[in-house]
Image (cartoon, rainbow, N blue to C red):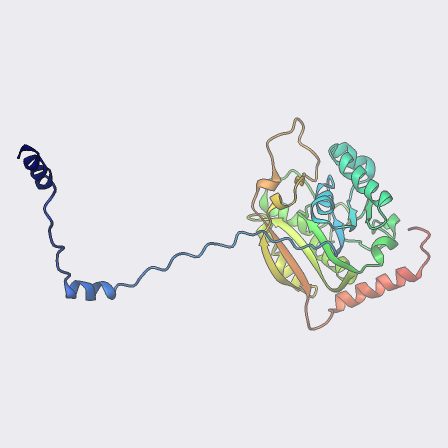
Length: 296
């Protein structure tokens, strides 16, 4: 009897069963009229890389050649002409870290017949295709056929912090001519060098003074249009480091351009045909190519 009593007490210690409350039809009706929030779509974060291993690429305004090296070493781009405005000695003085990049690129071109990589010094972005002695890169650039002509972070240099003064300096290539516009004349020089369906790729920082350049309008006036633009993500180019036009900061410094917000613009030739400026530029290049190449 004692054992049965204990079992009975155990059963009675559980909470008694209670029926669930009846649902209110009116409350259910009201709930059905409340709009349901749709789950937010995840933003597309895959980086855009406007290059393929099959592209023939002309790089303009290289600094320490880390971008060219990254395209070759990490993206399989084997057909490159990488140019810079400085002389060879100026490059090594301003960017000592350029030496291994240049050595590996040149070594690859010598040892692998499938690699066509050339490094040219003293090339002016506004004179592409002219004789080497004139800063145009000579016949290697002039023969054209480029799928991509690339100018990363165009800038003529300078220490001024005045926004309006920076805009004027970067719209005019003052070291060469007080009236020559850097970006406009780069577009004019690069356009005749494009292969069919080729594009011009320009990356600039976001915000002032860069937004004041109105790069879309500059391109539009020479017969180009923006096909697309996207955020530039330096991390997809391993080994690439943005360098200043003036050279490395002594002691290393804390300035890292690759950490700043930047945007890449892909420029295409407008469908309505070449402008008069483009036709004039093409005629000049044709005349030069018919001349002697002894200066190339």
